[in-house]
Length: 158
Image (cartoon, rainbow, N blue to C red; front, side):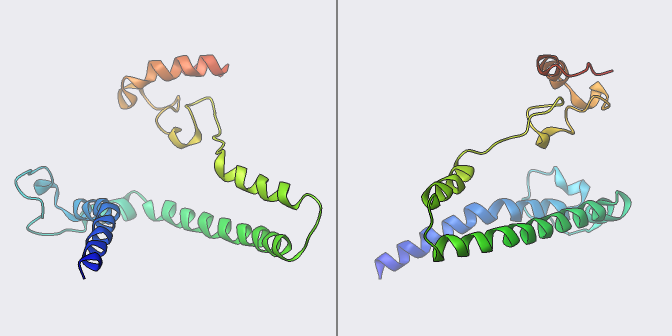
């Protein structure tokens, strides 16, 4: 009985560890602006949808969300179209180079390749280092990234 209780508590802590930040983000999104910076209360007294309305309606965030969903679904379809037949062949047939092919698949998961570009270390942080964004929005990173762009042989930003 004690072992089951410890396992339950451990599972509960793991769930809170992963779901806690999502819950805090949800609470922050539904908190009115006036109460957001009040450190005395963790849970807001009232909830509002104005932030979500601003994001999805006024700033057209629904378009970006729709594109993200379409991209994810297309990626899943392409992965299944390639992966399922490959998995079938790898499990059913014996052929020369089968182990090398399996090793290659594992190495793609082990060694992640990040695309480098002229605007930052990878495509993930493009918006921070784009040359058309004024310096006051970027802050202290601007000069560092300009030096990095010069190291990459990229054109100078305006």
